[in-house]
Length: 266
Image (tube, rainbow, N blue to C red; front, side, top):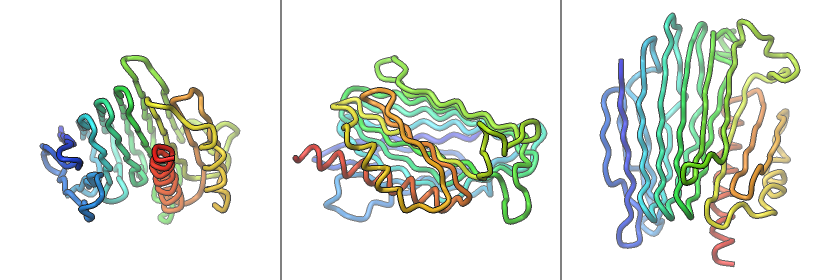
């Protein structure tokens, strides 16, 4: 089944807001903004479906207009069920000049024999701020389904004026590759990736060490943070619990937003 979701964030009278949305079942979009003094718009994507089924395709388009600050939230863990053909998702995100977008998604749980192929294409204009995080689990760990899915392939590309800034190509095939091997999960069961991109003044030199300090109390994890260019920061984290990684990415995203605000007013 083809499922569509469109979200557009606008900016007016000094405040960001949900300007327009269109969705087909099982999607639903809710404005969850609470504080009138907060100029950011908070929007939650909800779903009436228990997860992605065989043959499902999600077509998601998100546009953040000039000056808008939009924080998107997912409702719960995303399950990918047993499949023969597979499911797919295309997510296209566009930020206009001076826009900010934050999206740390709940962990993905691929069930036994799940097959998934996804692509995230993110286009940024000048003076944009992007924080985008995703988490992949090993499956239904507490039900004994550890790395029993067939294939998970997800590509994320971030562009600035049609120039590729960073690309993440994640392909896991646990039925054919030993997930405990060197270069794979090496004993961990969950992994998280967060990209933070600033097409304005760029990433500050002190942000990477600040994030290491922020995460130094996390137990039984392995992590690495790199800044391949002045505009891009990438964090990769391995662990054994979805909630732990989700909370850690939320902390990082909050710090990145606060860091930018402090930098602007310093």
